[in-house]
Amino acid sequence: MRSVQSSIALVMMGFFVACGGATPAPAEPDPAEAEAAAPVEKAGGEAAAEAGEKDGKEGDAAAEASRQIPTTCEQQDNMCLPPVAFVKRLCSGFYPDVALTLFAKGTPFTRGYLTRDTEAWNASGGSSSNDKLLFDEEVLILSRRKADTGGMVVSGAGGGYDVLRWDGTCASLMTEEVRQHVPPKPKFAPIPWKSLDQKTRDAFQADEKVGPLIAERRRECKGATMGAVSAKCEKVDKQMSAALIEYVRSGGTLPTP
Image 1: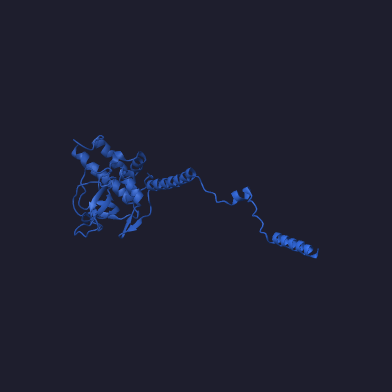
Image 2: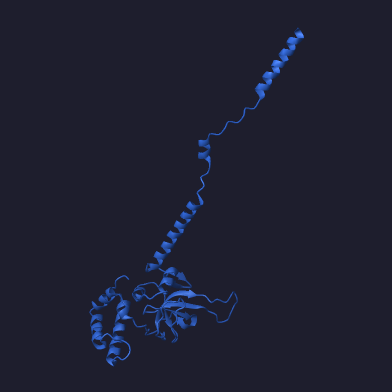
């Protein structure tokens, strides 16, 4: 009898030890908590839309910057140059009113002067003048073009410049064709009067010195400036162009293009 009781006691002790040492099964996670803890990944379409929106905003900002007429410059090779985006837009078109603003008294941009007569061509693909650039003609330096030598050192390959003329056209010059030394009597490309905005022409006509020359030119040339014109027309046309340039160079007020 005692042996039977001892056996029962041992069985009971083993049962309780086994129950006390068992590891409880892990609890099932709460679906709501699991969803909240999981990182949120954006759908491909949503991410692409946000990337496109960002690129669109950057593109709009660049386009707006290209339209703004700069008042400050970027220093490059000891020259004060307009922003690249603005220059690209300027030389892809024809903006004579903008040219007058850039050449105005007090603007910081570097001027250059021709060392020889040279043909006018525009490497940017925009408008170019039929008139040659003349020795001592004043231009505004827009950008420096490096020579493309494929990494090789080539003697005489000095690159060149893209420049703006007073008539609003861009021209591409070799390095040796332009200098920064101011000549005694700089020359200027003639301002295209008929291509100017009406507000700009009104400002010129309101000046007491320029206005009479504009009126005289109208009488003598009768609207024509090319082809068969009188010697008097040619003379007064040059006088008017010189007066327009002097007005701008001396700080005369013009409307913002």
